[in-house]
Image (tube, rainbow, N blue to C red):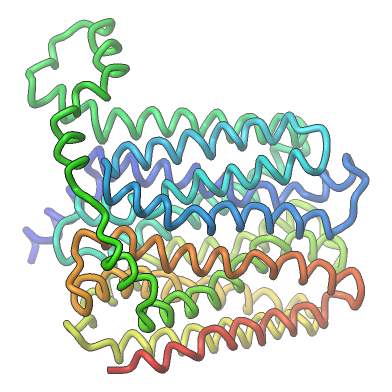
Amino acid sequence: MVYFCMSSFKQVFSLPVTSIILARIIYAVNWFNISSIFYLILNDFKQDVSMLGLVTSGFLIGIGLFQIPAGILSTKYDAKFMIFFGTMLLSISSLLSGLSSELYQMVILRFLVGVGMAFFFGPSVILISKYLGKGSEGLGVGILNSAHSLGGIIGIFGWIIIAEAIGWRTSLVISGILGILSGLFLLYALQIKNYVSSNNLSNYSFQEKVFFFFKFFDMNKETRDKMSKFTINFDALKSIMLNKHMIYVGLSLLGFQIAWNLVSTFIVLFLRVELDITSSIAGLIGGLTLMVNVIFAPFIGRIYDKLTRKNNFNNDILLLLICGLVISTNIICFSLLNIYLLIPSILLIGIFASGGFVIPYTLARRLALEKLGLPKYEILAVSFVNGLSLLGAFWVPYIFSIMVKSFGYSLAWLFGGLLVLVFIIPIIKLRS
């Protein structure tokens, strides 16, 4: 038991896993920081809350629409290159967002940020599970979600302080630069270090290592040739994308995506405008969901690994339903506009969102492996349910912002809470 714990600890802090976690943290900073500083952007562009809904919808279209293409390319080619490409695209686009001069430039650039994140996500789930070892799928997703929440805390709370000190444009440029640096470290950890170690290059000069760094495409030629021989089977694609059980998992994830996006996107603006709370306190309260998620996601992932039974999904369904009911109820509580009720609601959403994201991603992998017998398509399965959930949610932030503008936050939060429940209930049909 002690050996197992020490082995797991060593795997979690190995260089490849560390690089994925770091990239995921900066990925999340570039996801969440835009919503926390939007009150500054609105003042600069002289727009209202509907601009936030439009920009968020553009982002969700990008990240949702490209999940399946990214999954297919990651299946056929090297997942390590895809995760690097995604990191660089989202980081450069985030950097350029700080230089945008009009609304539609911002929408297009946030769309590209979403595209980059689509290419990052599927490979990150498969690679971290690979480096952690067999039987750690739930733990891997839990760690990724925990890193995502940690980056979200930095993006929501930290970026308010940074943006107020140096301006929102400069703050976005900084987050883009951090993303580029994390991408280069990811490249080194996943590709270069293995090559250097296996070829006894540890004693090479700095200039020679730099040369190898930029020649990584040639280094991995044998691997790429092997991967390029793999051809996509369209019957297998159809089996995944038209499988009703996979669609039920995607719909349940859509419910959690709606909840997560509404809370993370609008909570700071809601607290600032509706409850007249200072920006720093609003950022701190808004980050509570992410703070508890950082703590609970890995634990729930490990608990899920222990509860998982092969070819039986009843435990998964029960846990998903409980998580969905709790989150839906607490979003509805936001409509009461009571700060003392709102804070515990935010905490509960953060705790139960851990299960809401760990279980569907792991379920998608299990369905591809255990029900469909398609182990080579597990990245595509994860990307498919993620894409279905993100693309399916693109309209919700815009409609929510219109409801806020027309009827106020109370009715908008009530609508959001009920909508979450509508998409989670169909998971009952997956019962064994």
